[in-house]
Length: 450
Image (tube, rainbow, N blue to C red):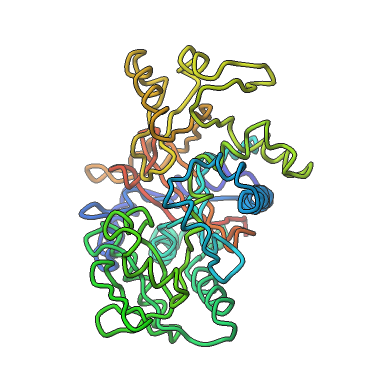
């Protein structure tokens, strides 16, 4: 089955009247479920993202190999301070990653960000969100919402739609880490930890409702209300056993330093935290440079090396050095200054598109300053990748209007071993980031002809 056949069928079925009926229901459900990023609705189009079964199998197989390479590099870095230095950790980060979290994986819950040109199996992973991957609960809610739209009633007469939920996997990863940490199976008191004013707060409520439905005692807590006393961590009167950490470790340190109650409690093994301090190693964008760098090829087996070559764009930490590009020796700094149209500059420890400079959209003087500044605060330079697009319909003045949207592919990963479920973001800006202030999210389904 061709993906384009399913897309064309969906669009042909979406008459103006059916689009109006579906849009009314979509708007109502977005409000009811709180599917907003701050004040903006998270979904602004009328079609889900589709994969064929073969495309989804391909994606899962490639993710598995890349995760294996990340895990191999992480374990080598824990054992070798010289390799760890390539990740450009801050001093306090180097101190925190010495802490053994009490469970094997540094990334029980994570998400890879990629661009997938499905018609030719071209897949490039550009970032690894190994610390606080968001939007799993949003994706589950979007799937439920779209299943109920009038357009889907017509489409599902001809096609089978398979959902890719993730909340259950998040819960299992949390419970597994806690069981390893505690040494026995027991229901924890769980908190979802982040600032109360963050625009993703509505997703925490979706997770909260789900955890409650599974019999887990859980609250949402703000880092500013945490207390560590008598060897126990508290959120108000709620004694905490397990933290589902959605706040960044850097922000905890900025708020309270190494003496923040959460930092102290975790370091004293008084509480279990997912993801742990050691996730910072892989969260850094320098982790892709470690995979891509010719100096580290000895770390990986043949399958992993092929996967890195095929799916990790050429990435280097910004520094004065000689390296290889397209198997030719280059002097890194003059090279990236000369060929700016080929590269993206990214801060190693930022999120949501912050600080990213696209060389092909930047004048020479601005690019030179950004690259030079990248020597002072850790940055990576990454080769530009092609961004795919698909047509997506929306309702404009009562009529269906199709427009091409760029889209990314962001598979959720668990235990650092496999993917399950996938976030899709659409946009007209190459950053394709909802946090950065634009775009739309849609549910991702596997589709096959009945």
